[in-house]
Image (cartoon, rainbow, N blue to C red; front, top):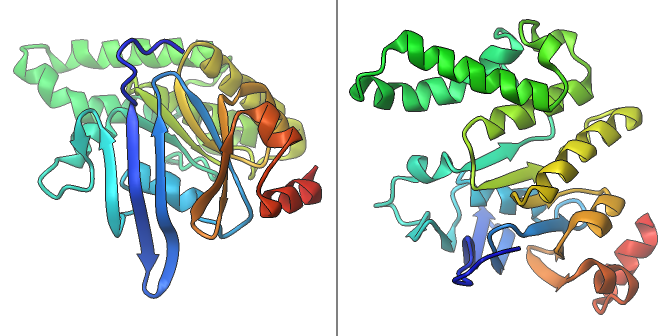
Length: 259
């Protein structure tokens, strides 16, 4: 990881989220450096997915700070949509548009968000659309699905859908990728192809925050692993220490139950 000024890409400070009387996040604080791979594990209901959704402002946090690109995303004066363009997110259930082809799914966000800017710059819609299509095809080649460009998501396997979802997120050239249990909805034989693509992204230096139950992936790819429990980060360590010498009793119990 190269980060010359040592400033975190994302700074989370005392992040809190409640649904009514239920505290889901109860003071999460963490720095995420550029190029860092952070894997989040923990039992169901521990706040992992809520933490990820708060980072991308899909959930509005109750309190705290999320500093990204020099702005606090929880400040109501900040236009969060400008900053969210630089955070790609991949969900459990793919969230592809079934009424659009694979390539249309990948082109949709760049066309929608950057189309007006291109028009102001005097670029014709036809030229801009051709550029978006070219970029989308390059992404499809990268994930090995170039031949699926014009088919609809309903014809794809789960693993293929998730790879398309990753390509769709990459189409915006994000600074960070957020993965919310990206393999949990897949048949076991399809998990490997998605994890392999994620490993490639990690090797290329993409900043990643991954909520997952794939402990092998965490050991191999993570720079640090977080254990969330009861809405807080109960332990944070490099993979070797995290898995071989955990300090938190609840983490030791959790690892014994899943490994």
